[in-house]
Length: 336
Image (cartoon, rainbow, N blue to C red):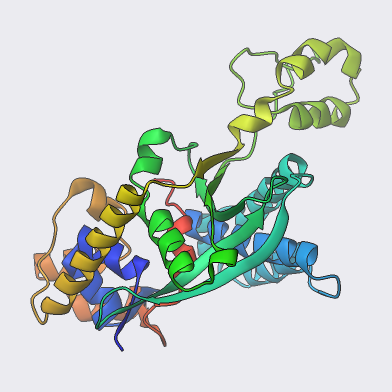
């Protein structure tokens, strides 16, 4: 039976031409964008961290994952390192902040990177991955979706997040009632390290009211400069709960039946339309979509009549699989 992932459905809606590049021509960028690179590292570290909580005999740990990427980073060309910046350091600091915030979250983790397979229509099967499945202290089961963004999304963004609702439906379709998920838990993180306070000319640290920092980072900077923490207690008190602006979790217990039906109907319609594209894949020219598209350089070369074959060889490679199992990428948000 033909398979479709939410990644494919989403891209077909966004731009049929981009869908053609990825799912018919099987192209992918040789190098991911910086936000996607950081997000990939964080997702792998979180997967390993969750499995250490689930399985006593699990041998891997998140720092081994980070060490692997540090090694890969050192092997990049100098120009590539300049393009990516200190991605491994950013990932390390963000993960440490995540652990400080959620290490003792009181949740029981049942699955990590859980696969889903269910029939979307009589002819098309939906497949993908769920970041995690957990139970809270009340025994309610939640689907967790890790998302790393430039800013913490608001209610409007969650309303538009149909992927997670679709996956809740898919999980419950393919599991016994005793294993059903009761709701969604969005696990947000800002893809930005806290800003350390600057050392002023008089030897003290700045105390700006709007500094984008948390108490831990501020205290560490105080100690780093050999200063007395008591003289900065006012700032430490003010920043005590600032970590919530870097990491936040939002629950949605039991989406309504009508909401789930609407999301599934839309996914089915898009999946059917995708089958009819054939050789026709019109470009959806959009300032925002084109700016963040992985296939921008190739698409522009074709539109402008440049050497598209050279651009394709330089910037892209053939992926072995069409990304059907790569839905974790949808929770790695482009910080554009």
